Structure formats: structure tokens, C-alpha cells
Image (cartoon, rainbow, N blue to C red):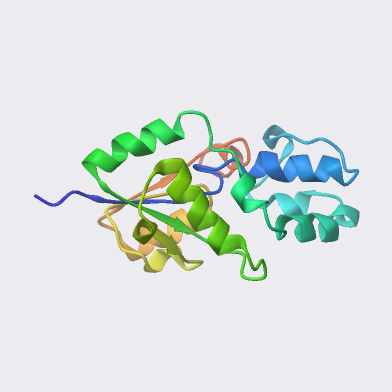
Length: 170
């Protein structure tokens, strides 16, 4: 019997990208935010324009991606999921960050003790076939489900996406 193919996004689902972004913002002289302060998925649009160029530059430096912290409990959860499903990590790369893909691959292998062949870099995540797809970006979940209507797409909710769900605001 084949195991189901589970596709997991990384940033916002497994890795705490938001907190790392907020830490950099404070380092460059910006205000301290939390995810609860954000009113939508794309955080950069909600930060004062004066800080955006330096924030973008710092996110693309070596060490940013590899320094992300996993959310509490996700390592154990992915370890268990790997026993009942074929787990693949479907993550978008920052193509203008020369170290991003290498650091992301190394981070996933080190953090979850998985093989590099389980890591797929894709901005068009709806092209990756699976049985279950988990992402924190509403558009990604919607597009994937549209292309694979027999699969199950789950929107991983967080303070930044909770207001985007049907019946919970805009």
C-alpha cells in the first residue's frame, strides 16, 4: 500500500520566518512587532517603507535562512508524519539571495533529518502533485486545491492569516 504524499510549506508552517523578520526590523532601528500586529499574509507591505530596503537586504544575507527557528513541536510532528506519509517540503526560494536555496536545504536536512530529495523549490506550488498540501498563504492553498480537487489543501493559520479565512473578516 502506498503512503499518501504530504506536501509541507516551510516558512510560516515549520520555520518561524515572521519572528526572524521582526528581530531584523528591531536591529535596523524599526519598531517591535508581533504576528498579532499584522493584518495580512504579506508582512513587508505593513512595515514602514523607510525600513523595507534594509530589511530586504538583510533577509538575503548568508545566515538569515539557516538561522530560522522551527516552531515548537514541529520537529516531532514531522518525524511522526514521516512514518505514515511520504513527506515533501515545497518551499519558495528567494532567487535574488544567492545562499537561500543551499541554506534552506541544509536547514531542512539538519532540523528534520530528511533527505535532500524530499525538498522541492517552487513558487508555483500548484504544479506539485500530492494528496495533502499545507501552506500558510491562502492563495497557495486555493490554487493547489483548484488544480488537485481530489486532494486536501489546508491553510495553516496564524495571527497573520486568521482574518483571511471565510467568516473571520476580510
